[in-house]
Image (tube, rainbow over all chains, first blue to last red; front, side, top):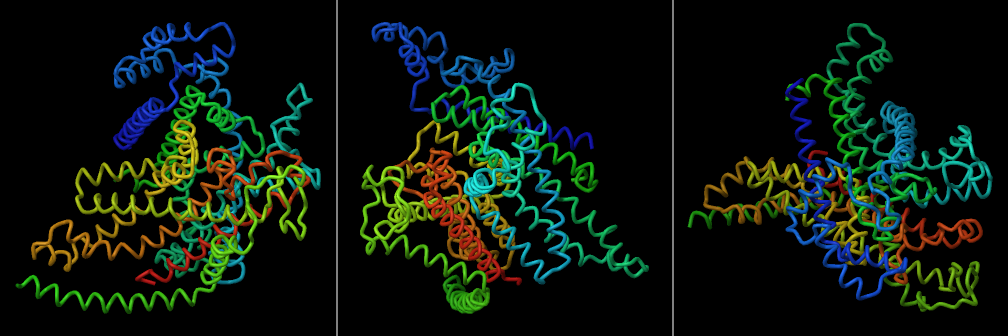
Length: 327
Length: 297
């Protein structure tokens, strides 16, 4: 277990460093020069003439270390990130970009976890049902449902949900996380705001869960140890519950781990539809306004979250299934 | 001389086998009702996008502020948008754009996957280990976010969207090609080809690609669906296909404003349904192909 754990950790760390290099390189490939960008903001705020800018430009590029070779720049950037916890400052607000992203993590995380819970609560029973009723009408209905929710673009589903539940029926709020008028945090109001985005995000991921559970149960049902359990006199229902489910559902942990990426991508869109104040909304604003330090911080944090998600899933699976650790 | 004889013997045999395999696949596909329905829907959508604009002779870009936000009428069967453009014309032209992006990106991704998979499978060793590590990493990346970030930095446009979707959508194809190559590498006919002096390149061209084609077609089809959805999402967010060029995704962009969503449903429902129907149909065809081309089924 120990050696296996260390190996997983090292691979994760190497991947993370690789991703930071990629993100850094990407920023240097940007067609817009950060110094110009910075000076433009300053000029728009007034106080600088074109000659000033010419003069300041070279000094600034030197002060920011932009005249150094790119690998050195990367190391400087990495050193600042580690020693000062800084990934630069927003071109727009001037605040530390990392702080801006980190304070947006909780709303995104709440949205993702609620959606994930929903995916499993809906997807596992439906998958089991489809498998046990294989090739009957229930199976077809469930499989068609799974196929449809994969095919429908989440933003279209989200818009339709707002149209029906917020505009026509007026049951749920159309967007945001709290009522704008509320000064204090009202938990019920928060839940009402969470329902639509979490449902839309969850539905997007329920298809793969159904499909996976169905196949896995069908495979397990053909196994010999089930025949053994049956032949020793255990009722079939008990055989399925005691012997088929645990073995079929265990690998679902890995599926959930792989879902972290698509959940984050889904949250990115869902947050825009429902104006949910998470990382995704901040990031799209940054993308549209070329606020590179914020994009950079968002990329690093997203990568970290995906890696941690995969690592946790790997570890959980290793704990649950000893065969994995022996590899 | 010997090698020529071997080729002469093996070629007709493989051709005969492929013909019967092809006919069997076709027979199985035609039995798959959902897949046939998907193919029919897809045909209808492609026909509408490609042919109908020649008959429905309305310019999708002509604006007329005086007739903005009109409901469906004989003059404008699907109504008009914010600035008076005919929505049916835009829907049809958007179909051309979205379908081209989907197919082009999927083709590019499949080609990349084929190359990576062939390299990994044929050379093995550290090349394989490195390429598969890369494949796993790309697979774990939240594609839409990565594409949004890249687009945010290098800018957007039709070609960029195609290239970037392709750059992130290849891992599935690579894995499949690699597994095909690995399963064939030790088989007698490949050993024979190698024994006769066949180089890696020749073995790949004459034997491996042919066998990888069937599973690659299936993955490629599913990749079209993914590419369609990705393009639609990016365009909806305003970082994909740029207006005035219409795409199904960017036609929904305006519906982010609540008054458009509330008061003008004909504005955003048709393009949304178009994306949904197309992606569903592509997936159904993919399912049918998978069942039809599965050699064990």
